[in-house]
Each structure stands twice: as structure tokens, then as C-alpha cells.
Amino acid sequence: MLRFFKSSLPAQLLALLLLVLALRLPLLWLGLPLTAAELRALLVGERLHAGAMPYRDLYDGTAPLAAAFFAGLEAVASRPVWLYRMLALTLLIAQALRLNAVFNRYDVHPERGYIGALTYLLLGSVSTDLDTLSALLLGHTFIVFSLSALLSTSREGYDNRRLFRAGFLVGLGALCYLPLGLFIAVALFAIIVFAANAFRSFLLFLCGVAFPYALVATYFFYNEALPGFVRFHFEAGLADMEVDALPGALQLGLLALPALVLVLALLRSATVPLGLVFQTKFRQLMLVWLLVAIVAGAVGQGAAAGAQVLILPPLAYFGLFLWQKARLRWLPELFLLFVLAGTVTLRYRAQVPGLETLLHLPAESRFGMQPDPALAQLRGHHILVLGNDNRPYISNKLATPYLDWELAQDDFGHLGEYAAVVRIARQVAADPPAYLVDQEGLLSRLQRRAPSVFGAYEPTVIPKVYKRKLNPQ
Image 1 (cartoon, rainbow, N blue to C red):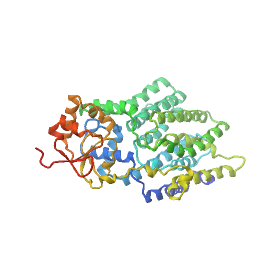
Image 2: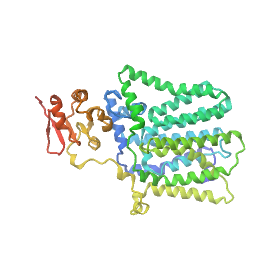
Image 3: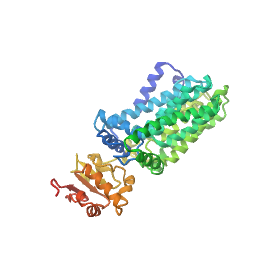
Image 4: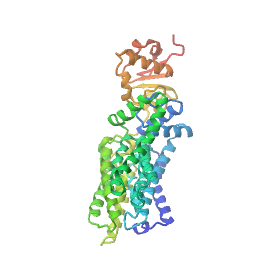
């Protein structure tokens, strides 16, 4: 198999695509439950498509470019979960092929072919977490595409357009997921190593990073959403990360196979001398990339969906050393088959009875969003949920700006303050929800403080669910 993919012919590309589709599509065809990250993205897209302004009419920390992308998908179809899954697969394939093209174009390794893309897609299929579209996966695509613009300085010297473009792409990545801004450190190292005038080049790169942020800040300024942008994107983007990911223990278990491949690849690369100075510098660059990826994951506290995508680029690069020719020619082939078998086993463990228990790794589908049976009768309405459990929104629509309950504490956490009560009353009165799900038991206090708005709600037969009167007095 390795010998086959160590070629850059169209047949190898077609075989690679067929392999990844055969590996991933059957589970998608069987169906995956809606994840917390997908539900949040659907609600954000739905709300923005209806005309809401991010950070002004929506209390949520989703980065602006990702939020706009979700709104665009909502314009294609209503709650397009199928489109999310197809785009996630497309983005992962695009990242792998782009990175592989950079490897081949710049001769970063003596051997060419599709081995880098094979490693990327194979280990990117271990968990179904990367089968779902997320802000991180979207932003990471821009980071991968920025790499070639940074490397060009080594061949062509000081290039204004390419350095600015690299910074622009990193800025777009951070506008999708803020911790991706840490990849400025990777760019700084690349500029120091490759650029003719490092200081001037880095300033130009920073101008590229700042440009999309200046455009977005200007847009929010003229739409009276700049304070919310600063509050929800910069402050909450680092201190109050979304908890949309799988449990930490499960993530570590699923990272065991990629981590094993990465450690062996690093050890193998340390013993292989590289002939060209550029190849040695590129290996140093990918070591820095790996360190920044680990730091970015640590900053996010593993809370972002699809966090394992961060280590795939350095894993694909160092895997080139692991799969190269060895004294025992059959050994790399055998290990690749082991990795392929391990990927299939981990991905489809839920379909084999008893395998989850044997591996001590529950299926990711067990942590998907399932509708609350107690709210089965509540479907197709505009509602407000006072609490952290967003399951009622699976079959209903968000009626107010209060999507992220932690961020909503700016108002609901200060019900003793007049200004907070006025803000809540104004937001709810602008789009009164047909039903209110009171998970935190706040309605009685709200009715006392804002009776003109919340006095219109009466109990229903469903516990903690209140219905708005048709003709409130």
C-alpha cells in the first residue's frame, strides 16, 4: 500500500479519495446523533439568518466568521445537518490535499506522493468528532492554506503579497476560532528562518492579520455591536470556552493511536539526516507547529469540538519519516495496516457488540444530543430556555438573544439590578417566546420584577414549562 501511494499520479489520488469515503461514509449513512456543537451552530445560523446581529442580538461566543458561515448554510436549507456533515468531510479532505501539495511542491521530504494526505485522513477518521462541522475545523482550514505563503519567502526572497496573504489567512482562522491566533508564533518562526528581512516581513504579516479584524470591527462599530464583539469574542473567547467536546477521558483514549504514531514518527525523524538546508528548516518549523498546536489545545481546555485536528499537520509531516524505506521493507507496510485496522476498530466499535466495553471507550454517539422525553409535546415553537440544557432547542427555535447561558449571566445573574432587569425585559418583549422552559426556577423572580413581560406566562401540564397567554392583560 505504501509503495502504491508513493506516487503523484491521478490514480493514486482517486484511490485515496475512495479509501477515505469507504472509511467514513458508512457510519455517516447509518446516522450520527446531533452533537452539542452542531446544535449551537444551527441555532446561531438560524438566528442570524432571521436578521439578528451577532454580539448585539445574540448572546453567544461563536467567532464572527464562523457565525456568518453558519448563517449562510441556513440560507441554503433549514437546519441542514446533512450539509454540515458533507462540508466537514470536504474541509478535512481539502486540508489533507493542500498540505500534501505543499510537501510535494517544496520537496520537504526526499520522497513524494500522497503519503502525507493518507496519514492525515486516516488518523483524522479515528473519531467521529471530525465528522461534524465546527468553528475550529473551519478556521483550521485557513491555517493550513497559509503555510505555502510563508514558505515562498525561502525561494523568492521578500514578497509583500504572499506575506500579507499569509497574515490575512491566519486572521481569518482566528475570526473562526480565536485560539488559532496563536499560530502567529509559527509564522514568526517561519519568517525568521526564511525571510530576507525578518522584522519588516513580520510587520507586514501582522498587517495581514489585523486587516480582517479591522474590517469586522468597523462593521460591528457601525451596527452598534462593537462592545459585544470585544466582550464575547475576545474576553469570552479565551476565558469562557464552549464545552461542546467529548469527555476528556474519551478524547485521551481516542488520541492514543495518533499519539503512538506521532511519537514513533518523531523518533524516526530524529535519526534521518536531511540533505537540503530547506528540509532541515522545514522540520524545525513543523516542530514549532506541533508545540503551538498543543498550546492551542490547552488554551481551549479541550472544549472545542474536533480539537484533534490541530495535531494532524505535524503528524502528517513526521509520518513521512515513519513510512519511508527501512531495512525491513515489510515493517512500515505492516505498521500501516495496523494503523488502518486500529482506525476502523475505533471508528466502528459501537457496531461490534462488546467492543466498547473491551476497549473502555464508549461510542461518541452516546454523548450526542437526544430530545428530552418530558418535552416531546413541545415542538415547532419559539422558546426561551432559562438554563444550560439546550435540548429543548432540538425541535424548537430560539426566540431571544439568550443562547449561551453562561454569557446570559451578564443579565440573569444580576436580577437585583435595575439595568439588568430592563435589558432582559426589552430583549424578551422584542420577540416574546411562545413557551418558557424554566430550568433554573427564575420565572417567579422575573414576574415580580418585570410583570408586564413575564406576567403573561402561565404553567402547563409539563413541569417547568410555561406558556404565554394568547391575550395577556
